[in-house]
Length: 125
Image (cartoon, rainbow, N blue to C red; front, side, top):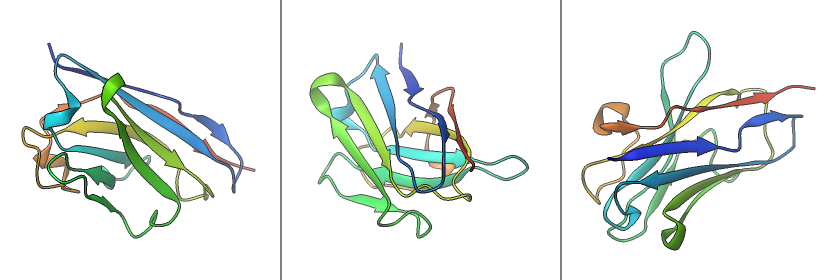
């Protein structure tokens, strides 16, 4: 049974860093595109970063470009989201999600049929 489990969320001051993990079981990351999304209270789910497995290309939302990095650890079937220089606009519940295909990468939640339960990120001074 396919399962995605996020971890690593928490509280951080502006300018700080957090690393989120998404561990996948029931399948191998090698074959599927993975995305990270976030949802702030009262807002829709926003694509933050994605990675396709066909050629390894990644994409980022403009709001996180240069601060966030998505990466894969195939051996451990885990995808990471390294978040640096956290800003007051970054808080929310962060989700990882898996597509049915290896390509392309997508920032649209409707393209991802499989989701984790989410992990909360709070940024405050």
